[in-house]
Length: 281
Image (cartoon, rainbow, N blue to C red; front, side, top):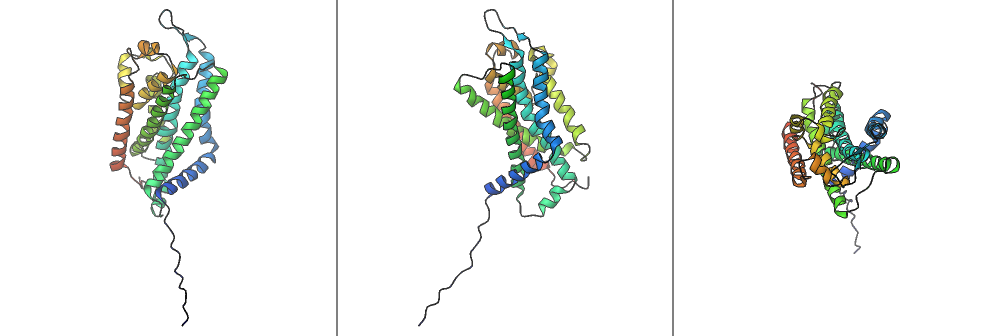
């Protein structure tokens, strides 16, 4: 009796969500770098702010007697890092995702096997990658041309990483949530940029925070950018700056609490209000 070997068809394993998320991030990055104007405003505009303000305001910020003053370029660059993170997360995602909602891109993606979570993971992956690149560029320019000093304490690098990652996550989800207020693809820049620029001014990115009127400080304190700026300045500036600007301390716990609160709130709001297809208006 002859025995016959039976061959069974090989079963193909479905790709994991992690691999799909990485694949979608790669697609988002390729699409991003194929749009020169988007790359310009994402990377070069914050760099131009650093160069312009660092050149014009070359003075030092004086502290209490007996302490070394802080160059304004150091003060400004720390705030610009936070603003740059919000630019590539909140502002960028709110604009691009809303455009894809209204032009039918998301409707077409819904008809593919790609999980929706992988799409959002790709968007956040794009935001994280561009945020890292932008931070590196700003720090390189600050250190090379404006005598910016990097922190010497290892713990400050840990604080930087925590504030950075919470900022990326919370502002990315906030940008996705904000798409609910954008009525058409053409109106996206007009709806996104003005509130972002206002927040930059009242959160102390361009000015010494103590110079901003108290009622505007109160408004800024509601939103994550002010706390991101504060956290980044704790990393790059001496403690006496907190006494002068932030009422005596850096309020590290509040920085983390507010960013986590925005992360949770943005996730929940996006979960229940986000619309996959708005091509009909």
